[in-house]
Structures are given as C-alpha cells and as structure tokens.
Length: 119
Image (cartoon, rainbow, N blue to C red; front, side, top):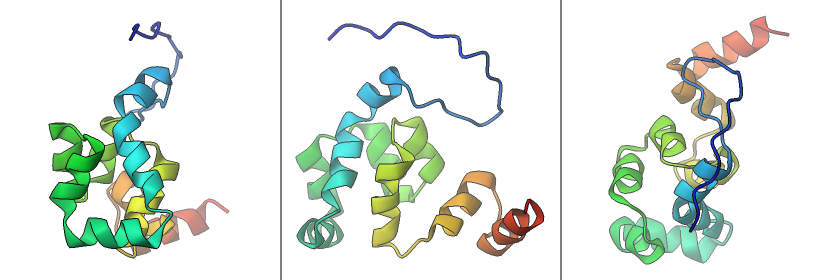
C-alpha cells in the first residue's frame, strides 16, 4: 500500500485531527467495526465479548486501548471517523452532546450551555 501524500492544510486548531486519506487508512479496521454496529446483532456481540469483537476486525493496540477506555479523542487519533464513532458511542447511550463534552473536556451540561451561548 502506497503512502498518501502529505498535505499542508494551513490549519492550526489545537487538538484538531484532520480526517484525511492517511487517517482513513489508519482507522479502516476501527471504522469498519463501528459501521457494523448499524446491526443490533453486532452491537450485542460486541457487548458480550469486546475483546473477541475487536480481534475479529483486526484493531491495533492503540485502537483497542482507546475502545477499552471509551476514549473518543483517542479513537479519533487512532483513525476513527466521528460519524462511525457515533455508532460506538450509541452502544453506551452517549448522545452527541456527551461526545462533544468528551471532545472539549467539558461535562455534558457545560457543553450544552456552551452550544446555547453560541446561538
């Protein structure tokens, strides 16, 4: 597999991971696993045996550690796409606001108040 060319996005947003071709390749197995959660049987299989389910999809050590820790930012760093990670978060009844709070270091309520203040 050839390396993707490096791009200079001229963006400096602290804590932001750009989801580009390189990140997509890095997170392919993770995103494929999260996509599988569209089916209830797969969500149930994951809950029943997370380790076996992660092995089935070939997650690497970084991805497995982030899954075990429920570390959304770690999953993004490991190549996770937030749209697929939402499927993972849903298993644990995490809302979009919960995930936003996790991403910004705020509680869910603090994040909701932040969103309201931006309106």
